[in-house]
Amino acid sequence: MRLVVIPTYNERENIELMIRKVFSLPEEFHVLIVDDGSPDGTADIVRKYMEIHKDKLFLEERKGKLGLGTAYLHGFKWGIEKGYPFLFEMDCDFSHNPDDLIPLYRACKDDGYDLAIGSRYATGVNVVNWPMSRVLMSYYASAYVRFITGMTIRDTTAGFKCYKATTLQKVLQNAPRFVGYAFQIEMKFKTWKYGFKIKEVPIIFTDRTRGESKMSGKIFKEAIFGVIEMKVRSWFQQWN
Image 1 (cartoon, rainbow, N blue to C red):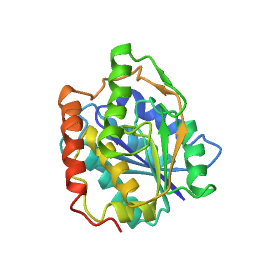
Image 2: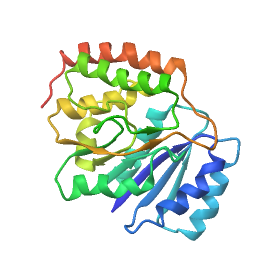
Image 3: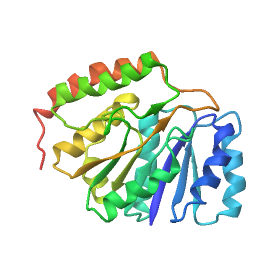
Image 4: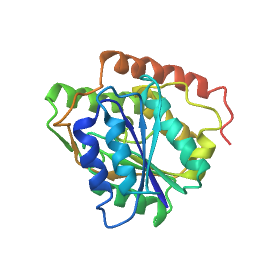
């Protein structure tokens, strides 16, 4: 079975549509919402749908905004404990198209990859509704990460992924140090350093049309300096 982990904070405008869309897909996915105490009632909507989708929709509530990375870690550990062999991470704002869950799953299940990345830059630049300044920032951030780390992944900051549970168990032996934007980079870097097979699956990324973005300058700063710290630490770690 497949578990999609979706962190939320004030996603009332998107959560109902997202739940309905995932459960309408031609293949079955279970969904775990990790909500960081959304004051807009996001969790209340999830609870309503849990009555409809028993044993398929789950909710973990946390008090306060604890960071995107910790939300995913919470969800991954929950899913591994429940015995899910494939775990996904996806945004709630429809910047990631739920239809793409299926090709990501196929890359791991059928093609034998350990991590499948929904990549905005595998075949050029596939981003919709972003201003050019943000496109350039994101694109060159990935180039910067490749330069520092040596990874060949085109979309190093992508947040739409499918992991095999066995991959996550190895990668999470030592908990990631970052909780924001750099968390996405660190998880890919560790997966790559351990020698797991990684595939980038081309997607079209569409910026949110409902709700507010959680992106900030602090997040980008963490990524820029965190990559150097991450690379230096890797020289003193065993990767086997």
